[in-house]
Amino acid sequence: MSEVMATAGAGGAALLLGLLLTEPLRRFALRHGITDRPSSRKAHTRPTPYLGGIAIAVATLAAGGTVAAVAGAFGPVLGVLLAGAAAMCVLGLIDDLRPLGAGIRLGVETATATVVVLAGGHPAVFGGATDVLLAVVWIVFTMNAFNFLDNMDGAASSLCVVMGGFVCVMALIDGPDVLAVLMASLSGACLGFLFHNRHPARIFLGDAGSLFLGFTLASAMVVLHSGQEGLSGPVSVLLATLVPTLDTTLVMLSRHRESRPLLQGGTDHIAHRLRRMGMPVRQVVRSLSVFAVAGCLASSLVTHRLLAPGAALAVACLVGVTVVRLLLKIPATSATSATSTTSATSASSPGVRVPAAPAPAAVSPVTLQLRPRGWSGRRGGPSRPTAVPHSRAARTAPAPSPPAAP
Image (cartoon, rainbow, N blue to C red; front, top):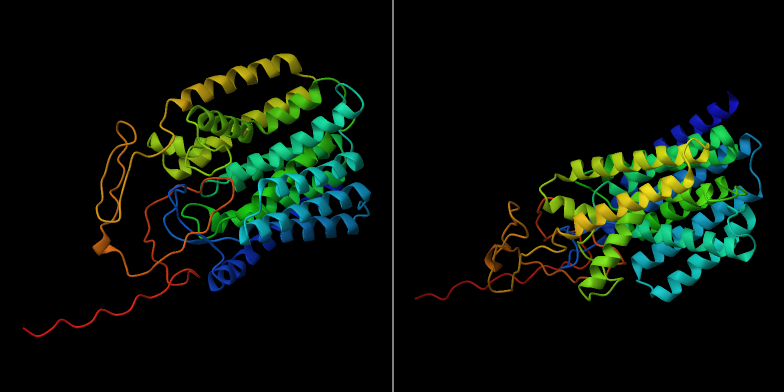
């Protein structure tokens, strides 16, 4: 009972911290112009502050570390996990403020993931260095998949609540208990952040948040299945992260077929395609969450030997191929086109209406300088004015001169 109480206490404390820290960080970001600005490769239409991921990271690290220390469960593995998660948050924050190259990001991510795998262990499939390599690659892939998945209001944080809650329950059942405390803290922090991030979002995670979520979840799953032999470990991890895996697969395949840069952001993710089918944003997030719950339940069945890993893998591959093939039939980008002197409206698919771009005369005299963003497309949502006086890139145009007398 003490373990359950400690886990619940960590989750409650993180929820409260995530809820209270987000608003001050949102105001700080607005005051200093730390905003995600619209562009042709993003779905949102007004500058929206970053730094939501900082609130989640602080809440998770503070609540999880404190409760573990009080309960006497703070050990080297947890210390490495917390340090690695903090490093990923800092890396993402730097990328939010001044975009980094893909090589630098991958190098830091790989080094951090390697330290976690060497300290915390990994599933045993082939034996030796091959298993270490597979675990490192999977952690790096998952954290960047979450970076891709952070493309719609509430999507990434909602999925993290589901997956983190699943890992928390599994850790309470099978151990180690310290992972349960960490995952409860992560889920609670995301739940508190959702009050500000649900549609229409008032603040975004940013790369600091998406990398932190992906790294913490993937590392905890690898450590949870440490020493587990055979296919059950890798298959369990794959099923639990099926949604971000399918989203990344869809995006990579779509961009390759259309000869577009693989790492350039765009509105071609699962969430964006479901929006073009006419689904509201909140319904899209609920659908992704339900799919994640199904994957986590299948993962638990495989972990406890109630479902053969080979059969589960075959079914997951079949479902994944079917979903990707169906979603590829939905247009990857909107058919709306606009120029600086005219506006046009066209449908991206039958039955989906795309709003016309505003005419130049209707735009407030504010100029926005667009800064390149990370690797993922931004969120969908209702159209909002692009002129935001608090943006760092906004400046007021000179007042028009009075007309000459006739």
